Length: 441
Image 1 (cartoon, rainbow, N blue to C red):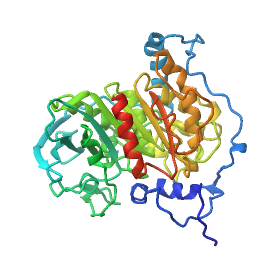
Image 2 (cartoon, rainbow, N blue to C red):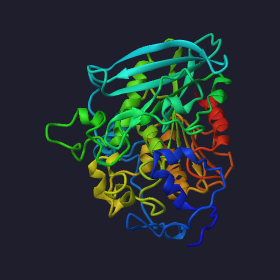
Image 3 (spheres, rainbow, N blue to C red):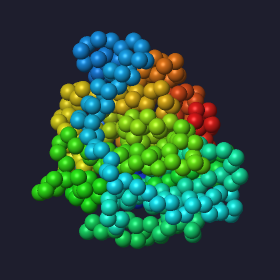
């Protein structure tokens, strides 16, 4: 087999997507020897030729179910937006339950100097069950030293456990999932999943990180292990077809964290931004759509099921994603209905992006990440822009996709940026995220 260095190789992105560990362990900016693109994944052909992406017609984001056109922000907010939320709940992500009465938190590290005196560390455990040994999330926050008022906060929804995300010996040891569904100590991975805390602190932002698998594991046939298992009926091994997949569970957990953040007097709770990459980019978008308290979302390489158009046959498709050996557990079971023909779905990615309006949302992609279809995300932004315009907000303002590394569309309310590199953010992107936050948060 011939190994090549391919500038737009999608198999590398596929390998990253297949493992939360690999997804953050290998930075896209590194030069790696890559295999040629796979002709098929899970027995399903993959297209990387833009000329073969196919013709499609998107469902109109500004037409109500009764056929009437939406022409103002009030009608969008009161009528169209709820319609789309309901469709996404039943047809893509699944309906989540109400938050448990047992939801509570313990601030066990109230404020400790950390990171060589540049930050004040706070650690919080959120509990979702009366039994404190079950269903809990560890939240790690750093505040700028000397802040004279509540700080705006950037929260990373992280593949990495807290104790591996930041080089700080004061962090509570983290747990992960074993293959048997048990919680076990996280193995140390020097450099893995590191968060660029200093870039945000130096600009006056508090920084939080939370590991997505604290609440729900990212694995096939594991619905009984995490928070979804708490809500299964007797004899059930997975939720009903219109009930929550793992992405909805992770998003639900973010909303629970927001319940805590609005009580923290050092957090400016009206200025909370969240960021996630890949499946966590999808998670961030859905969390932002569902919880209006989230002021801003940055979604990196969210791809199929996130900001990339499903009707566009390029890279990963619904069929690839819901294949039984891959990621069907991340979505409502109903999503599989659209695998054979995405055009039969009443929704597409531009509608998910539009659900953030009028709040800021930045879509970050990479030119070497064909599997996630950067152009499909750009086209979704173009199609979502009319909703932002109802509120007097800016979007791409063009149907011509800019070249990689071009920042001309970055600082719109509905922003778009494609770096030179692969899946997820590269080191240079963190500074651009800060620039975006400084303008809009």
